[in-house]
Length: 313
Figure 1: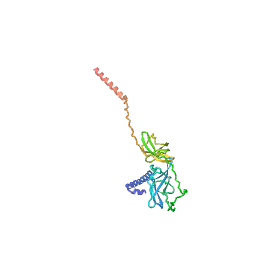
Figure 2: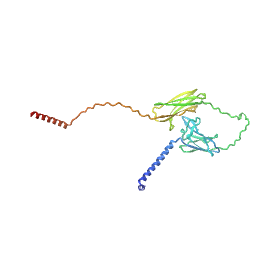
Figure 3: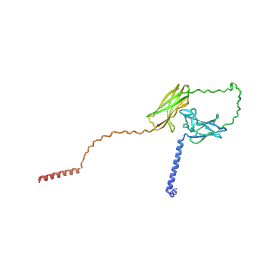
Figure 4: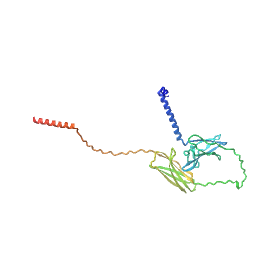
C-alpha cells in the first residue's frame, strides 16, 4: 500500500483524503438531521375488504395524564384499502386545538379503527423510519336487515346518558419583565355548569418542545373567572419559549389556551465610564556613581587652583 501511495501524484492523494472527509461529514449531517426530525414518523396500514375513512389513535402520557391522540386531517384509504399518514399530524382527540405530534415516544400504543372495527393494538417503533401496522380484515356483513315492525320493551335500545361537563373558553396573555414572566389567564364559563377544574400552565422550549416548568392549580368555576400565574426566571437564558394552559375536569382534558411565544434576547453589556485615576506626584531621586563623584571633586579642585593662580598674579 505504501508503494502504491508513493507512485500516486500528491494532488490525487490529497483529493482522495478530502473525498473521504466529505463522506464522513455527510453521514454525520444525515444523522443529525434524523435526530432533529424525531417528531416525524410515517405510518402505513391497510383495510382489507373496505375503503373509506380511517381513524388512527396513539395513547400518550402528558402532564401526568393519559391522553388519546388522533390525526388531523383525517385519513382516507386508497382504492385497495391502503393508507398512510405521519405522527407529526397528531392532535389530542377531545381537544383538536392542542397538537401532540411532538409528545409521542417509542413504546406508546398505536392502533386504527374503521367503521366500528379496530385493528390490533401495537407499539410505536423507535426511529423515524416507516412503520407498517397490521392489516385490518373486514368480512362482508351477513346479518339480515331488521324488520320495521314495532318491537316490545325488550327491543328498545338503552341510550347512554353522558354527564354534562363545563364548557369554557381560555385566554392567555403573557407579559415579560426583566426577571419574570407573568401570565394572565382568563376563564369564561359558557354553559353555566359549575365544576371543579384543574389548570396546568406549562413553560417549554419552542424548538425542542421540552417542558421547563409547570404550575398546577385547582379551582371551582362558577362564573367568569380571572386567574393569574407567574413563572419566576431568576436567570433567564436567551432563547425561544412558549406558554400554554391546559384545563382538566375529572382528569379529562376539556380545553386549552392559545400559545404565547416568548423571545429572550441576549442583553448587551452596559459600559460604565470610570472617573480618571488621580495622578500621583513622583519624586525623582538622583543617585551618582563613585566615578561621577570623583570627577566632580577633581573639577572643583581644578577650579579652585585656577582661581588661586589668578589671585597670585
